[in-house]
Length: 348
View: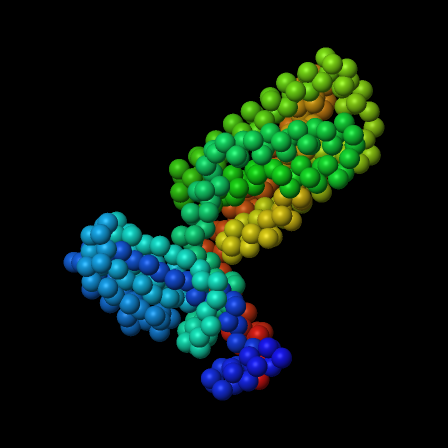
């Protein structure tokens, strides 16, 4: 009943019943500008056909002192709009805040989206990509705690030969945020971001491995763990410390998928990346190898860990570089081949 009522209402309003009201078609801009700069900011937005709901309130901003300008922009056009705003100097003298509305239930939103080539779900907002990457390179206490727990789970998975625990360790591990920060730093030429991500990866894994190795030593001295638990045949978890061609391929694909998910804000996809690559389980096996001093386990696990992280960084960097060069063009070609993407979800 409610769906039929909505459809009748949509037809009365002139909108298609299938109009993508719940999609992320717009990005909301809130701009705090010095009064002397506000007219230039408004002019940068006023003549664009991919901008709506443009408002200008004079003298209402207290810090920084000046005006407030608000607008809604088609997601695909945010990059061009941000470039125009930077040309005014607003990013240095004022404030720029981007938010994504949970819904845009008005017809002009769909009209604006239809004017811009591409699909809103394929839009890349590079400012948001950089911000997300920087947040992932911050050495928070929670990051280190989660990584220690994940490496400990990986070590227990080795002792118990449990594939389920291997998956659990992968999901708990937060390390991919630092990996993708390194890739984004290279692709965006933000060398401070590259350094922050690389430093976090090295120091956090080193600290986690040492902590778990110390715990494993305690377990060994108490009789809970023996060298045989590490060196025995483990059909479910031997792959953790045996790098091969398939390890390389999986790491490359996972790095590519993770970078694509970051660029498109597809956080749900990250879970699949987490459970694809054996970085954390390899670290757990390395910690056990140190505690029991099994050189084969140590070297194999270190090779697996380094290989996986390196391949993910390489693949992630290449994907982000390719997207910066040709993603918009690819979206336009996709529309020519498959039809107008803005109308695919609409009913005739």
